[in-house]
Image 1 (cartoon, rainbow, N blue to C red):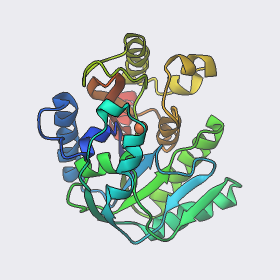
Image 2: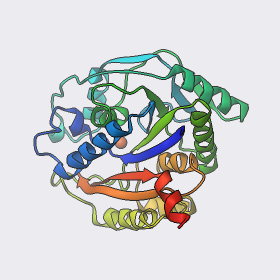
Image 3: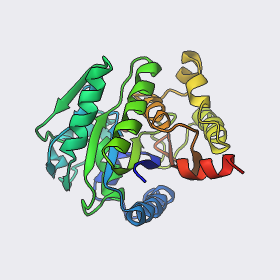
Amino acid sequence: MAGVELGFMAPHPWIMVAGEREEGHHSITTSAFRRAAAEVANFDPDVMLVASPHWMPMSRLRIGGAPRYTGTLAEFLPHINEGLPPEHRRDLPPVPYDFPGDPELAARLHEAGEAAGLPVYLEPEPKALDHGSMVPILYLNPEGRFPVLLLSIEEGPKEQSRKWGEIIGREVARAGRRAVFVSSGTLSHHFVFDSADALWAQGEAWDRRLMDRISVGDSQFVFGLSDGEIAEGELEAGGLHGLYMMFSAWDAPPAASVLSYEGIVGVGSPIIRFDPAQQEILSSD
Ligand SMILES: [Fe+2]
């Protein structure tokens, strides 16, 4: 069966692209990433769609249409250091990546978005990658086995992301692809630099409310949150738009399970697995 058959929300802490991912840092997250990677390998998708809030631009949906992405994060890593307090900056190694794209599916999404009147930009040449794309790819597609379709994340009206999700679900199925969708991002995003695994208490409460709702099949909860409620979570750029897009790729709410949740310098960082097929079975009982 073709379509988006599996989904994940996954964080992208920069420390995990800095050669420190297997040295005891954030072991709850890294072990959940490894479990998710085993499942992705077993699923053996035709394509992995990765939506990242750090893959600019945000004003219109950017679709990566290059046949292959090869390089290092050397261009992007200084930008990460710029955003950190001086005492947390460090020399970061250039992290290599090498994986195929899916130009045919990218062209289909571009065409369908234009036909729907949505602002969209198809990028045929490979450009430097960001850590929001690379952390999930390093874990879930470490050998570059699966083609990756890179997407940006909108910040505009949620209705626009909903339309994109519907287009993605439809066009992936029409293209005959079995796909996994990765929404790269975190929930509450209030930095606390006291310790590597610090959590912001107000953010944890906000995050757990959302995770509790979607864990019982109420993925529509995210669409119902007001701007004021979302602001209380102090989310990073892109907000909940990655989830809006992923949930709208499916006709029914997916089954959701939280594989991990921990604070990473204050940021509420879950890995959540979404399975649309499982929910269909549950709801038909
Ligand atoms: Fe981020």
